[in-house]
Image (cartoon, rainbow, N blue to C red; front, side, top):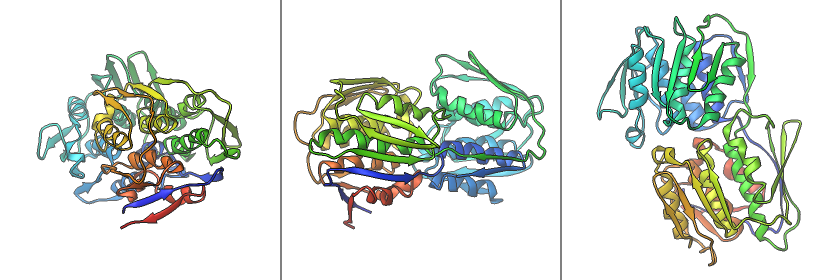
Length: 417
């Protein structure tokens, strides 16, 4: 679906309900499958959440998780401990290009029986469920936190629990802490100190716990971007968007948005799990926004597009994991921002955007590369110029209601084909 969007309004106000965090949802769904008696409220309605739920309920031998990277990592660990069950875990063409060897090696070192169906180190996988005999594993600390979380989630089911030793600088710490806190909510004894994560064994009986999933902070990022971009509407009326449900003491690493966007003139106000974003029109914007996003790489696209729209430079680092997402997000950003008239350079782990001195090009078609975040990160530029989003339906991966919610904020939308 090719979608043309534009918003010519001089004001931006509204209230939007965003469903549960995809990251929290997928962790809790796995824990729910392992420990009976867990009820989950405000589940994510994303494709990834639905695929995770469907996979865990399926008794089929072949499980296809399409583009769902989190599901691939978590389910690899889950099916590895399903004693006596054989599972072929596969996904889309892009998923079969995304490495999983580090997790497979870690699980094998614990006693898992996993074989590659095609290329060594990549899905699809043939997993023969078995009892894991060891309780200690070591892996590099700068890998995707999903590998580490996958091991943490099954750790309490092992007879002697699990000790994970991390080597080197640890990245994406908030996602590890999120997994840790969710284990704590289920009264599982677990710790993360220095380079060591320890998970104590837990009984697999009835827990009788109800956990409410906080709304997704990654999805909130697009509204932070919209409010920040209203800086460039000199004749605009007050800007205020309320989104829910959010906590000031969030488990999600992307909650750092509230701090980051104060630099771009957005204030955050929490009240009764509602988060109200307001524009501080008098805020002086920085010439260059410099950030290390090692702990929150998923918001890099939103921030880069925000800075491009505002006409300011940005230097973003800590982005090495973006090379192996739904697409190579760094190269994708470079291609699409250049298309709009930007001057941008990327390496394998950094992004450097120069100050924009020319107008944004109108009616450009933004390629999304099967990546939901590309579609949503560029959409706010419709405040300035008409813009076309290719494969707009890709947002269903994490935020199916995105385009409808934009309509409530005055965005005109036309399906081209």
